Length: 421
Ligand code: BGC
Image (cartoon, rainbow, N blue to C red; front, side):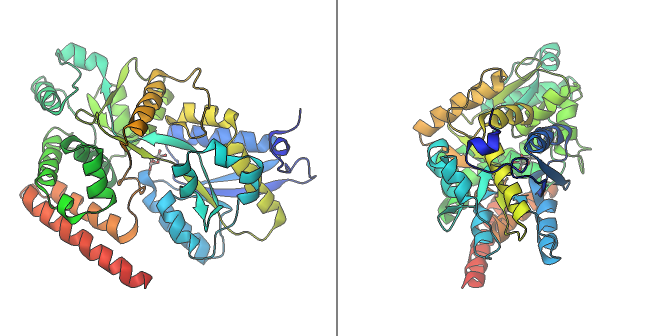
């Protein structure tokens, strides 16, 4: 049988007589993330490409983004690096981006990717990056037996959620594992914003940065709700990573976690079945929004031919149905390649795929603010700063947070347009 690479018109390293090597810079360091990357490493090795998995710790990728810049400054540019779509636009302007256009054409990516996804991975109209998956951010992970023992129902609406939190606390159970750092709080905030309005409100506020939406009463309500969550969060959470927090829910040391479905990867890695011991519930009050992100690796310009071949094999492998199934099963996400079979995936993945299609029809798919899918740079920094200050300062009112949010975002937008001009 032809190798996967040559089947799509890409010369595999093995076929062309040499070994290729590729550095892949990313922020996947938790147990399940590392396992998922191992799937890629093995599949590339089968094609004669040796992948150096250059993983930098820090959920959400803030550290990895800094390391990427320093690697480039010190002339150690990785062949591929994890970069979220809005930042691909910025990198595109630097002239440092390579091309995957030939691979994409041979592999017919135009037909295999939703137009929205395809747009996000292009630089000057040409494919420059490869998407891995679709993650959903607004999930609540719930330890079922802990809830059962405490006689608390799994919440579906915001009022039910608050009731459940109260009951759990009274029963001496830590209601929420979370809040370990600003990125985790921002992830919770994403979901909270979608409890006070529909997808349209989320889009206006956190994607379009509409001043009226940012300064609205709904946003005041969102901050108040974030404070409610804090009151029911493990008070010793500072500094704990997202995957540690998932572990607390899995082991029954906390009842729930609001987190993207990369948490599902950890649940599986801990030997549990998502949907069985740990329920995957839409964040209560989020029925009208599917907050997504697509993990994406961009190709940088590299001199050596063997490295360019490595990039082509990398991209082609990632888009293959085999990889899409194996990787996403381990990672907790669902395939980004359209029409990939979900046979053998857990029930949470099937639920995610269904909800995705439903949201697509209802125009309720929204890119996540917290995972750099909507905002980047100074604007995202401003939003994170306000969230952090509010979360860490109990005496700051929700009204003051909203005022700060609207003005800091406006200022950051003005500064960004100055530096672009
Ligand atoms: C990424 C996930 C990753 C998570 C935690 C998110 O921004 O999209 O793939 O698992 O961060 O590291």
